[in-house]
Image (cartoon, rainbow, N blue to C red; front, side, top):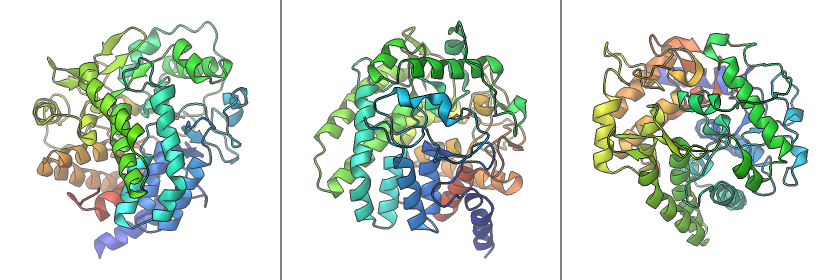
Length: 436
Ligand code: DGY
């Protein structure tokens, strides 16, 4: 009974509050449009109580797909707002591939195929899968072609916002190396509703904007972006999520009796490059790779655990990641035995900050990604511990965008949709449930 009331409270308070009927805002003020990976997770949450609305969410996201297959990180749906960058700032009309709708000109981690497969496994939605499969396939094809910068089969990102972990300390050195001669005039909107100390510093933000300026001047031509983008990274999180999503896309293809040859090639190329590029055997960590300086980005963040989510780590690698890092009190586990979830940057990093965006706070999404990975490798007790801590966190601090890693107090946007959606997921899909 308590859970039922609690779940009903969740639905009313956050997901429904941010629902425009067609898409769900990630946060009521801070993020008033449709974000790509937020939307996939929101659909997962919605599916527990309103499957048709979940499918509408996915259709709305796909309505922003570019003609070459790119699925943008934001779809604006002509909703007026004070959000910056506004749709006009992207100048996507400079691209011959731009869609009818206003969107951003970059992408975000490709969770959607994984979510669609899960929805279908829980309740058959074959017609819907048939309807959207070509769009999913085109997005994955675009990622594996337009974003394979070195022929390795791994895909690259061109902007920190594409990583989904915008302000991660992984990007600091790379961004500092970018010295823009000019930055277009802009007025930040992100510190209007959230305290500045919880948001990126000005230096990083200026480079975020400078990168957009570079891309719009290049007309978003994929080949030119690979040559000229000052930021070009193979990201462990992005590639892990893509690997998992490729496997899920393959399962959807089989369901529809569609050929899997192209997907098989993508998977085998990623698998054969993954370790050589990302695994650091000395440290027992996965590190991102900077294609511009041709160097590994040796910063220890939560994204090192994403290969567990994807299932690309060996059992021995998993054991090292978990025993030497995840449960290490000086890195990810807290000293007093209370976790609140997993801090997003190891506390040993000098750039660790408890409340600033991706510099250290706990996020519900990363807790979920980590515990899913732990379950995949049979670390059920630890996964359940993180699950319980996550539920405790939202009970005490509500559905916030992220949480102070020291005391679990809320940071960032209030009434954050994916925090509510994933709480529903944690409550309704019990640990070890067969998700596939
Ligand atoms: C923002 O506005 O900070 C977003 O994270 C960009 O996607």
